[in-house]
Image (cartoon, rainbow, N blue to C red; front, side, top):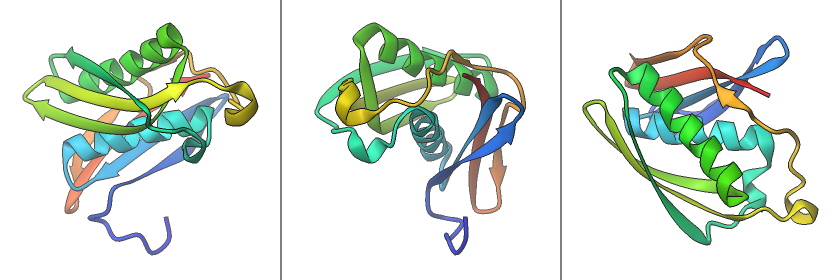
Length: 144
């Protein structure tokens, strides 16, 4: 990511066959989960085109951090499909193995958003949530 300081939250994609890997980096685990969600959304659409007009509450729990990440991303995929929405901003709180979050977005406007692909789900492939340097990494592969 060039000259990005390690304590600044950011996201990236990584190649994985026909699917797409998503990585979130952050100063905290919650920020890494927020950035992984942004990476997921940017597989579908340029989030700069998505207005953070509506707020959706999401909660999930899992026995460990890795399963919590897949549950979180799959909850977002479900909410996108159920509500016909795209999201551009996230506020995540993690307490043990529970996550509560707010996802901010708007209804899909195909002419303005130009969605590229449909993400079917987050997988367990290359799934990892770990402390890395001064921050956290949250990654997985999504099925497109």
